[in-house]
Length: 331
Image 1 (cartoon, rainbow, N blue to C red):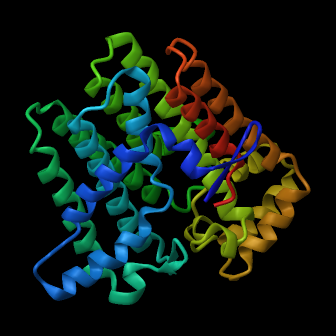
Image 2 (image 1 turned 45 degrees about the horizontal axis):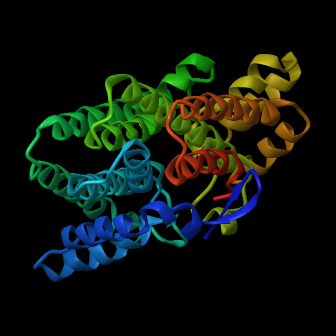
């Protein structure tokens, strides 16, 4: 896999080079957790192991730790923990969105139904908390628990606002800050904290993670409307089908004429399976996509600014390049 950076295309292996061995150790810990003595549960574990994708969250935790000092065994455990939490949220998200594809593979709910998918998500969450409790300090367990609560709050806020076509931009940003950015923020905080960073450095890296997460979700929402499903590798158009407003739609409804607004609302309230294409066509003739892209870029600049006080290192450079990836990605 390759990532777009400021100087062109950067191979993922190069980006993760400062933590390559550490990432392998965390993946071994993760693999040890994704097992069961029950054959059918093992089948589910093998299937969800395909959902690792870019390993962005464990890489963030390890890179922030490396940028602040030396990595410790706790970092490897915590990197596995945050990936378990992330995979659990993906499995549950696919149930909520009735999605069929994830990482170019069939979702758990499509293959085995919603009941087993929900239970599998719970299984992963339970493993994450059990693994986290193996650490001497309870700080990480409390932070992961608080973060999981925040993520669930964001998901519930999003579901509650389905069909709310008056959703304001600040409300949308609050939702995605909770459901997506909270976990990235926790990754950066845990990486820095476990490396013994001072309070101000931890605060700055929390800001880095939060800003990165908000930008990541804005781009994800753009891809849901305008991306190519074969390239993105997951089911698209679910936000539209569920009546969930995202930033480009919020901007379009706020800035469009009365006729344009009525047209978009008519499409959103309809049941045509081609709604995503119709909406994408409307957005292409407006500046709403550019507005959302600019908002994502603004959060990335805020994220990058927080890295300036860190001492120069390969890890810091990788964090900066990961920020570029978030706004340039196509999957």
